[in-house]
Length: 172
Length: 249
Image (cartoon, rainbow over all chains, first blue to last red; front, side):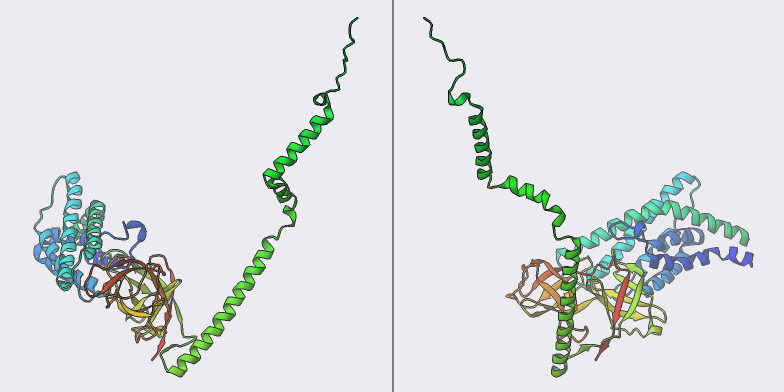
């Protein structure tokens, strides 16, 4: 039973992403915006398992998160698929300290990409009546999200990566 | 022969009495000039124990509360009766469901709250959700135990509303920030900053006369319509308990 859990630690941790996404703790946020939680899981997963796996689980994550948000017109799938694919191309770094900071940079870049994809969907959807006022909250959203994601990524990603490595070592 | 000079002077300014009189006069003169403020201040301290106290204030406030309550009930009854006569849609009484907010996303991309009452408790899609202050949004999805509410601030939310002062209908559209915009499809619509916005009496989605918000700023740059920013009365990022209203159609 114990072995079963350690083998599937990565999949089990996957279940917690929607829960954290729903939990939405206010004290962690900035200007009411939260860090983009799915990226914290997606980055170690893709780094361990490669681009194709990252792409597939990006799709799964997108499907789940779209199902628990009410916006029917916009989807998070494109951003997450792209991030999953991109993260899979990254090699594991040997130097630990540089590694920590690298996670932050990669994750904030990823959240910037996701935010931009989301923003482009809004832009195309409302192409007829675009005025300047809709850009301000969107810019605020993207910037706050990029900052927060970059801030928390070194803490969470490195821990998750260690956990994933541990579970894989048991596997072989 | 030397004149004996009178030692004791009989000049008026040498008399103590005069100075006392003068002092008293000055005092009263000052009192007169200051319009008796000294007396009033003195009286303030003396009468302090006998003021109408906190207790009296409470009694009066309580009676005012009772008065408003009775008035409100009378008006409600009257309103209900008139609505029945006109056969308009009405809010059913005693059919509210209280629910707690278990997840909230009020900033960022998504603007929704999730409540702890679902289809098990009889929540239906399209029910109106109100909190302290007024309208919050509408239920747009239910599961067995939970229901998700699209907030008024969400870009997905579009509702017909009613500007109370000038009695015109408008469309309330969420814009992704904290203040949804009110769109009035007429260039010369009469709307001012500070106008009160409530749910429309003619709406088919909402019960009538639920307070929504107050006009914060008006944008008149567009050709065919006026848009206004609304500051909402119910603050979704603070509210923990809400009411789900069922609507009779």
